[in-house]
Each structure stands twice: as structure tokens, then as C-alpha cells.
Length: 261
Ligand SMILES: C[S@@+](CC[C@H](N)C(=O)[O-])C[C@H]1O[C@@H](n2cnc3c(N)ncnc32)[C@H](O)[C@@H]1O
Image 1 (cartoon, helix red, strand yellow):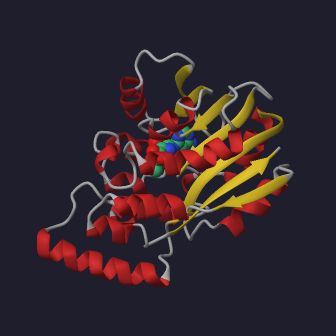
Image 2 (tube, rainbow, N blue to C red):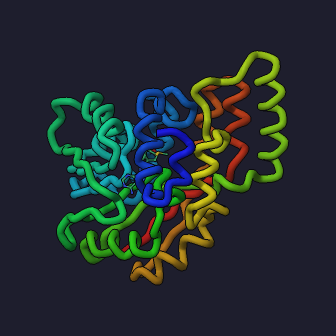
């Protein structure tokens, strides 16, 4: 696969997305913001899950688990976790990381059409998936279908299309640091051409915000929604990293949304 495949009319966007993440699986954890190191950052990411899901064992579905970093947050709270992703290569990293653990299964499935039974789960968690959905409205109806009445959907995401004003300034400084010490080879984020080409074709390609997502979830049948702050996570990240990564935490606006079925 190369970029020329984008112009092949029979190569579906979803296949392109799967192929992209398959290729990123080996180095995904090396890019800042993906791996969740133990300590304050781990606790900051885990806090919204603890707050919304509690610690009494629940049946939780994690959509787009990637290399299994968020999986650890939920599993270590004592929940029974089913984690899905759709490139085998991503799942292989996650399976290896969590080998031998009870209450945890990984399955290869499409988050937009899981084929899981109705009302099986108490909660659904996903980080950095919603921006890359190809058919969000249908996906949200699917997630509503999978939850028990009163079940919760917890979304961690951000607007990766439009840097904030401070973010534009931070990006400028990051570019100067790149020029001085060389680029960070594992960080491609929104910067790689392939990523940008996929973004261009996505429903949320022009940006995903809490205000855009909330009404779509209500239309899909979710009753209440709640906004949680991503601030404590970014603050914890800034405490333990270099200047370039500290600046990266300022580039895009992120949010956490909890919706109740
Ligand atoms: C930015 S990564 C986030 C991974 C993980 N959630 C994390 O935060 O570390 C996006 C993930 O979404 C997965 N993904 C994208 N579309 C998907 C779909 N339709 N079904 C399942 N996984 C999907 C990709 O394979 C990739 O692992």
C-alpha cells in the first residue's frame, strides 16, 4: 500500500484507515501522548473512568483499544473488559502487553458494526476513535444498542483539525525546536501527509468538538451527557516530559464526554 491507493476507487476509506493504523502499530507507543506512563499521568487518565464507572465490577467494552493503554486503566479498576480494534497488528501489541490477564478479552471487530449482542455492556470507553469514524451517526446508534439501560459511554477525544490560538503559537515553537535538534521521528500526529489525506475524507475531518458530538449522541438515543475536563491529564503530562511535548499538550482542544443511555 502506498499513497497512490487513495485514488483507487475500490479501496474503501475504512480499509485505508485500517491499513494506516496497522502500519503505525509498531511505533504507536513511542509517540508522545499515546503510552500512559505509570504515576501521576496514569492516575489522571484513570480518574474520569473511576469517577463515571466506579470500581464495582462492570462489563466494559473498549472500542479501538489500539495498543491497550486505556485498556489497562479500566481493567485495573476491576472491570471485566472486552477490547476491540480492527488491524490485527494493533491487537497483537495489546494482546502481548496484557498476556495472561483474567477478565480481559481482545477481539478483532469494527467499532462501527461490532456484531456484539444488544444490551450486553454496562459501559463503553473509547479514546481517540470518534474523530476517525466513517459513519458516526450509525456508530452512535450501534453503541446505544450495545449498552444496558442506564449504561455509560465515555469518550476521550479532541479537535485535531483546528489548533487553538495558543496551539498555533506552540506549533510554531515546536517547528523551531525541530529545526534545531531534528524532528521527533515517532510523532506524526496530524502532520503526516497520509494522515491529512484520510482526515480530508472523514465526517469529522474539519474538526470534532464536544458541542458537535453532544447533539449527535442525543439523536442516537442517549439521554444525558456530561462534560469532563481534560485539563488534569494535560497538566500531569506536562509535569513529566520535555519542552517539545509540553508544548504539544497545548496545540489541540481536547474533551471528555460521558453520555448515559
Ligand atoms: C489514535 S488510535 C487510538 C488507540 C487507543 N484508543 C489509544 O488511545 O491508545 C485510533 C485507533 O482506532 C482504531 N480504529 C479506527 N477505526 C476503527 C474501527 N472502525 N473499528 C475498530 N478500530 C478502529 C485504530 O485501529 C487505532 O487503533
